[in-house]
Length: 336
Image 1 (cartoon, rainbow, N blue to C red):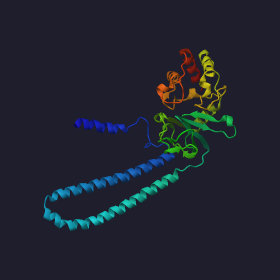
Image 2 (cartoon, one colour):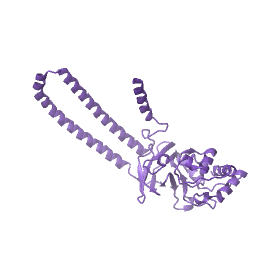
Image 3 (cartoon, helix red, strand yellow):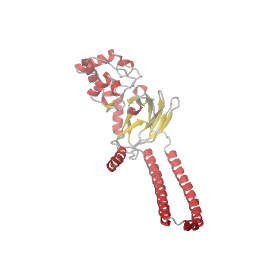
Image 4 (spheres, rainbow, N blue to C red):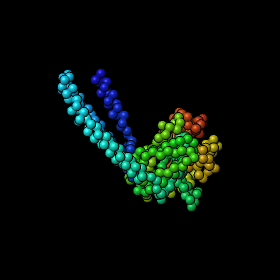
């Protein structure tokens, strides 16, 4: 019995561990504010909990110490009442003061993280079940960069995210960079992010949005402004045409299949906006909303039968011959 209790306690503690850093390891200005607020609430509630436990324990010990002396208990009742009243009044006053302090801290944090304008604007669109990030260029619309499921941000720069939903309610949550923000159809919202250190950070949809809600993830790549500009310049370019025989055959397979009915590849006749933009798919870290690493084996698996990895996704299976499937994967890997 004791061994079982130890195992249960160990599993409960390990359940809170994660290989990916979470909200208590902030890497953004607003996430740091939320982190400080969390620790304030934790410290106050922990102190209140300890005080309540100590007072309850003292009461139990004193009651047991008196034993079954009924006469003594009756005589002590008036004195106990005289002590209890000021204690209750003090407890009410302290509780009210703590609520005011916590409420003020919450209001101050909310006010500090409200949206502001920034030199960089990213259009965020939630789909079932993937994220679309667009970096619009008002001067030259053709230079607009689209990056499905991977949000690239320059460190130390205020970035305004304009949030919209394509279908149902989603919620953008990047724990190390900011709090949660809902994407409600027909009601655009905004949030501001400023990353303080370079790295890769994972995000998640935090509002149940259907079958594959749990796998609606995103990856944030935070890098120096110079490296971010290099990435932007590369993303604005049209991919070079395929050169190997396999990739050339893969290009022909893509253009002659139903792929063109859902995806865009700039520089080709494929220009549909139903699914993710594949213009630079070969340069991405992962596929399928950060569900699979972007390697040929998983790419072929995803193309052939996406329902196997993410049941319920809108992408249909593509029963291609093995030779065509391999060539198509080679072509897509070359889109960098």
